[in-house]
Each structure stands twice: as C-alpha cells, then as structure tokens.
Length: 172
Image (tube, rainbow, N blue to C red; front, side, top):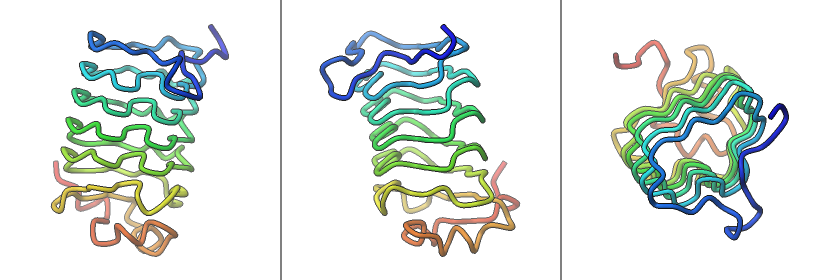
C-alpha cells in the first residue's frame, strides 16, 4: 500500500457514498486522501489518518455532519478546498506545524468549532477569505505566541484577526 491514495475522484462520481459509514481507519503508507473520498458521509463520526498522509484533498470530508473527531497528522502539508466544509459537529481542530496551505472554504460551516489550534509559526497560505466562513462569534484561533502579528496581517488571515489569540492564552 505504500504510496497509494484513498479512493477519491475529481468529481462526485467516484466517491465513497454511504450514509452507513461511521468510523474509518486509513492504513499506513497512504500518502493522499483523494478529492471527494468521504464526501457526504453523514454518519461518519471519527477517522484515523496515518502519519504518512501529506495531502487532504478537495471536498474530502465535506458534509460530514456527524464527524466529532479528527486528528490531522504532522505529515500533512496541504488541506484542500472545502476539505471539512460543514463538518458542524467538530468541537476543535488542530492544524499541525507542517501545514503550509489551507484551501478555499476548507473549514467553512464548521459552526460547532470553539477553538482552532494552528501551530505553524509562518501563517499557512489561505485559499481565500472564506476558509473559516461561518466561524462562531466566540470561536478562538490560537497561534504561536511569536506569530500573532504575522497571522493578523497575513493575506486572507486579516479577515479573522479578531479571532486570533496567542497559544499561551489557550483554554484548558
């Protein structure tokens, strides 16, 4: 399985399309979770992604309404457009320091998220100002203390400046 990718497609035609899927564990050696791989898997509550994955594709978990837990491993560098769009049951999201790019609307509609923990010291490139569309008004985006001003002034991050706080102020 080394160097393989999880089922995905460039359109919705080849996606995993089941409302019964509740838990997924992706095997070691998978490098890429393809576009639309788990699109509209409404019953999916948790997924385990191995440290071999470097890319989470476009629309991968979109409309995963029941997804309550996801760990993005430290090997991931790219989170695609709409990757977690409308995953409204997620309570918090941790973005590891390895991430350099977050696609358009990647976390839009994640209205249950109370906290984002964003670890890169250099702000990841955001695909647009809609990456966090629908962010709850009381949500906090925690970033490394030394990077707060960089995030608040970075392209497309400026839209979310009032949500950005130093990691040292994170709630337990």
